[in-house]
Image (cartoon, rainbow, N blue to C red; front, side, top):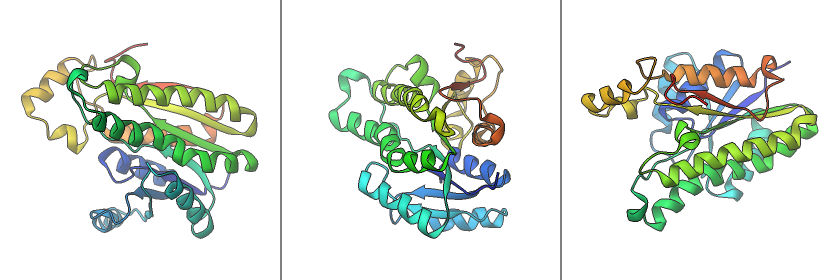
Length: 246
């Protein structure tokens, strides 16, 4: 199969960058989504280019449906057919539920869950009509098991698992697969910025005794995007070092 475009939302974060690189390594033409006029975008593209990656950018606020629909249309017209979508965009606004305000709830739900609808909805019918597509939704171990102080994040990431299973059934006969990845603690820049003693406490809870590597998530995305994964759909793949086994 000729490899066309892979679109990664939130493509410039630590996990997003690793996903972009793994997909490119596997032969996809990668487009990284970011917010409009995102200040670090040019620097990110230049850094990746110095490492041998020629990524393109697609600007859109993933909480805005119209912007997402316009982004899909623009990519298809100017760059190429989108055969792979990785819904990776996400934020945290942690607080105990009794102290969580409506703004913290809405921000996380709109960025982490509404975005999956906003980006997937205009694209999925095109994939189904063409008879091929791969949608990979990035959830979290905390969407599987829940997490103290993350009612908003856990709810959004659990919602991703539900929409994954529903969409997988709707498009299974159309040659389109829809799967979710639920990472545990991954050694991104954000996690590595945590105080060392706190990181050590986190690692102590992980049976394999280490943080995950961003490229391990990226390579799993690349596998799910490949022809080899055509019989996997509606699945939640847990990649957490044994932190939560289910």
